[in-house]
Length: 179
Image (cartoon, rainbow, N blue to C red; front, side):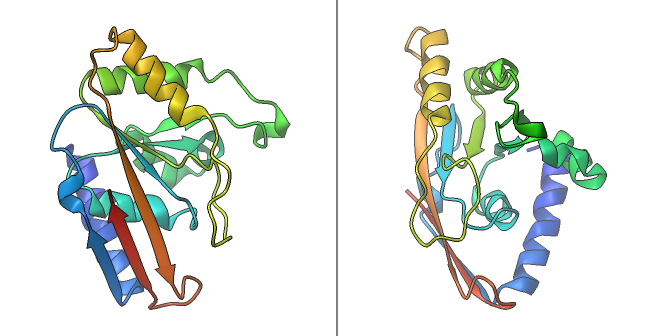
């Protein structure tokens, strides 16, 4: 784990402990210690979901985040330090989807070197209790990474569920289920 990732993790643990009365984590041992990994989670709370994954996973995760978040200077500094990969979406930047070939290339390189990528296949955060329709990006990333490695990469896909009790109120509870 990089120094900045450890620092951010430490800060987030402290902040989340202040905000939530309880954060229950189930299945932490389901995360493989090494090797290429794609962590897919539901996305009900735009900023909190990645924070919960950072403090819950036993290894460093690289996230994919919408490009517009990089316009916020302090957030952009930390996202670059944590090697967050930019995604360009049709609903951002004037409604024109930009070429995401760099995104797929960066994901492929990270997975080929045994890294862990985390993303939210719903493609956006929402407050509906049910899952939104999944976008195809996660499947494309997995298939392209395996194809690049001659189908010998050994990519693992780990599902993660995040649930909030009293999600809109201070001092609620959160549950993170891995696997």
